[in-house]
Amino acid sequence: MRRHIQAALLLLTGAAVLHISVLSQVYLRYVKEGLRPFLIASAVLLLVLGVVGAVRDGLPFAARRDSGGGMDGGHADGDGGVDGGCHGDGDGHGHGSGPRVAWLLFLPVLGLLLYAPPALGSYTAARETDNAVARVSEFHRLPDADPAPLALSGFIARVQQDRDRSLAGRTVLMTGFVTPAKDRAGGWYLTRLVVSCCAADSRSLRVRVHGAPAPPADTWVTVTGTWHPGGGGKLGTATASVAVDARTVDRVPEPVNPYQDTTPLLP
View (cartoon, rainbow, N blue to C red):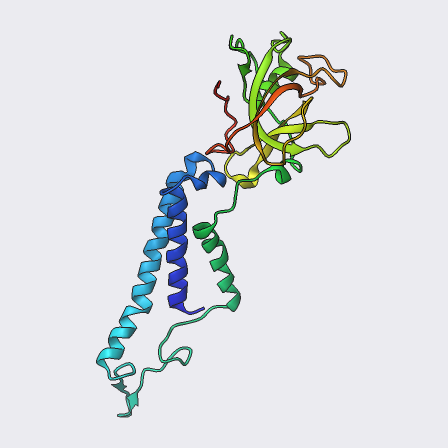
C-alpha cells in the first residue's frame, strides 16, 4: 500500500468516525454516550494526520516533477555526474509500501460510511451472563400509574431483592427486544443489553415472558403484565423467577440508544 493510499485511508477513517459521531447518533450502537467527545477528537486527529501525509508524500513530489523536467530535477554528485533522484521502491520517488493485506482496512471504514453495522441483539444476549443487577438498599414506592413503568433492571431487582414485595398484584410495563428461549419450558425473553464502556463489554438483562407468542427475534416490544410466580421461589428472594405473565405485547421502534436501560414512557 503506497503512502498516498495510507493517507487516503486515514482521511476516510476520520470522515467515517466524524459521520457517526457528529452527523448522526450511530455511535451509540458501539459506545456509551459519554465517549462522544473522544470519538470526535480521534476523528479530527485522523483527518489532520491524513492531510499531513497527503501533503508530505504527494504535493511536494508533484512540484518537483513539474519543475525538474520529468524526474526529480537531478543534481550533481561528487563525481560530476547526475543523480536522477530515483530512490526508494523504484517507481521514481521514495514512497514506501506496506503489505497487501492492509487493503482490508478499507472494508470496516467503508462499512461505517455506507452501511453501519447494527447494535448487538439476541445472538449476543443469548450467550451473555444475564441479570447481574446491583444490590439495592432501599426501594422507592412504585408509581401509582397502572401499569407501572419499570426498567428491566428495576423489575429484576424488585423481584429478587424487595422484601416488601411491591410487585405483588401490580401490572408493570417494560420495553426491550425479543430473545428466543433455548429450552422447552415455554416463553421467550424480553431483553436489554447494557454496557459499561462499549459493546465489547455488554451484559444482558432478561425477563422471561409467558402467555404471549414470541415475536421475531430482535423485535423491540413493550410488554405489560404481572409477575409470574413459577419456579417455586417467593417474591422478594433470590430464587424468585424473573418472569411476567404478559397481557399485551406491542411492537415499538428501536430506541436511539439501545444500550440504555431506561424506564419506558407511558403511552
